[in-house]
Image (tube, rainbow, N blue to C red; front, top):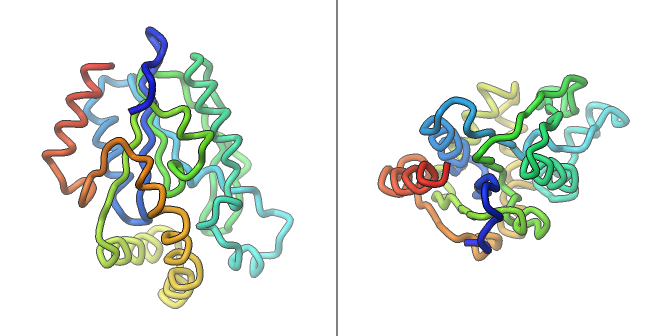
Length: 210
């Protein structure tokens, strides 16, 4: 775990892992175990760069699993603002159009700040802000099946496009950036939200701090 935070500072957790590993399940479990308003979530996926300047076919060819596709400096600045007790206007990303939405979401300061995304431990600026760094480690076949289901049911993709993206960018970028970031984790959680022992331990620690 990182160095001790200042007194009364919020607890900031970073949760990384491959696409479909169960990061969101862990994040929701943490927030659900806290009193209302005690925790907030920042999802890396909302911080993709705007793509309005590109035609639709070019947007679909962008490597969304590479750090350069994300405005990680904005995400880091938002985490710092929340740490200092200031609310932020979080961007929103539309995965059907591959572009940032015009509307933003107001995120208030809270005692627990959860930052979740495949690349949040690969970025040094973000790692420096996390008091606790988690990596959700789930087998590749399980992650792939979860990703296929999500993209078909929630993001309006075709199976052919999901398969192409997986082989072209998802798998190579996982091996290049996501998997290596595991070494920065304080805690590695096998099987994500299915690991009740790890989840109960984590929630207990967070409740003691919140």
